[in-house]
Amino acid sequence: MSEISASFSQRMRQLRPSTIREILKVAAQPEIISFAGGLPAPELFPIEAVQAASDYVLSTIGRAALQYGASEGFMPLREWIAAEVARCGIEAAPADVLVTNGSQQMLDLVGKLLLNPGDVVLTENPTYLAAIQAFQTFEAKFTPIPTDKHGLIPEALPKLIIKHRPKFLYTIPNFQNPTSITLVAERRAQLAKIAAKHYLIVVEDDPYGKLRYQGADVPPVKHWDEANCVIYVSTFSKTIAPGLRLGWAIATQEIFSQLLILKQASDLHTSSFDQRVAWAFLTHNNHNVHLERIRHTYSSRFDVMDAALKAEMPAGFSWSRPEGGMFLWVTGPTGFDGVELLQRAIAHKVAFVPGRDFFPMGAGNNFLRLNYSNSTPERIREGVHRIAELCHDETLVTPAHSGAPEAAPFVQR
Image (cartoon, rainbow, N blue to C red; front, top):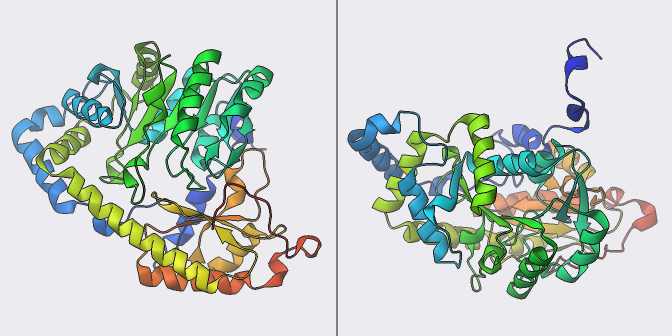
């Protein structure tokens, strides 16, 4: 250990680089077919409309757009968000909306607000890798919640709450990352009721809710939040463009006021310019037409990947069939090594994310997360072909476990 590294905080010793970010460094090479990142389709970015919105902002409110702004966010944008979430069943005033630098910043702020070293966070198992990293920064411990194909199982929560006294529960109820599960309405209502009874804060992360291309929308957990213990988090990264780095949270004023203090200490405020550009884009265009184009494209690309997997993958593999979102979740036979597969796949110019790092308590070696939103149908077919060829190699399965698929109730085929 060098003299410099000896000065690093103790919390840094348990942190590691983001697996996905490290994979994306390789996947960014043009010859690589990447199913790794949770990247939107860049050809669907509304470049002309965003350019027009930028011109409008600079020509009409340019001085304010280039100046410091309120830490809470640009009020007209907060008003738009409050009106939008009302359509899906959330009652919120603009004053309840905090605009952030992407939804990832809100996970950091929540960790700062609620976590002391050793505190417990309840999560789905597996769960979003970057959320694990965000909460690990504050030396949290994780307790997984039993999950099946309908999402987390609320009946399991009371015992976990009594035993572990968690600071909060983190959930992605719509097209969960990485499994693509959607938590059913009955369980959302149960979750809100149990959280209220036990005074448990719920962080509801909803980046993918607008990307549904089959079935009916399900109201957020926040819809049933009579006790004001749910923090609802979302983003414009998947519906406009991630480069704007715009997310938001809705919380009761008791929580909001504390998050605001942390936001002020963290970065003063989210970009004044980007907020106004997003507001101009949303109010000067038919946002639903844009969303429908995204949904249609992602639905078609899922169908292509699903068909390719059916045609190419060997026996013993299964995968999810989401009704929206950007990912599907592949389960290999027990003993299958997804990390080893990735090493071989990179050499064959194709990338994905192994499932292991999505499990806060370890395990998950035989799972893969595949992103279908960021590749053309042609590249999806070729990429699946390359992965499937490698999956036929029996050396990727340890002999003691070969042939028996792992029981994974949250995976469908």
